[in-house]
Length: 74
Image (cartoon, rainbow, N blue to C red):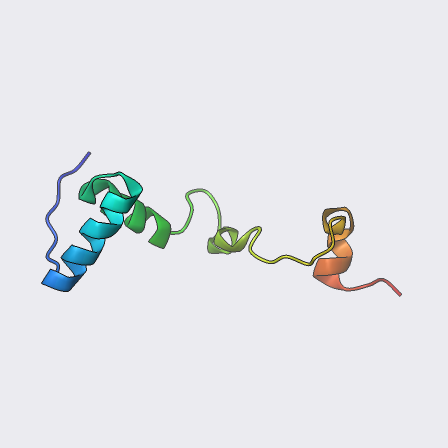
């Protein structure tokens, strides 16, 4: 692990510290998670960040994914 230093204003520090405490983690772990979330997933395109993001309301939508992605076949 590489050690680094960042500067936050007082409000950013207080908000990050409070969020970390509410999650039961250290401020350092909170920042690591925030950085990971902001970076694209390794080994996949940035579009993977949106996988599972949209709900169709159709419980069987995974069985007709081509129709959802490409439209209904005529």
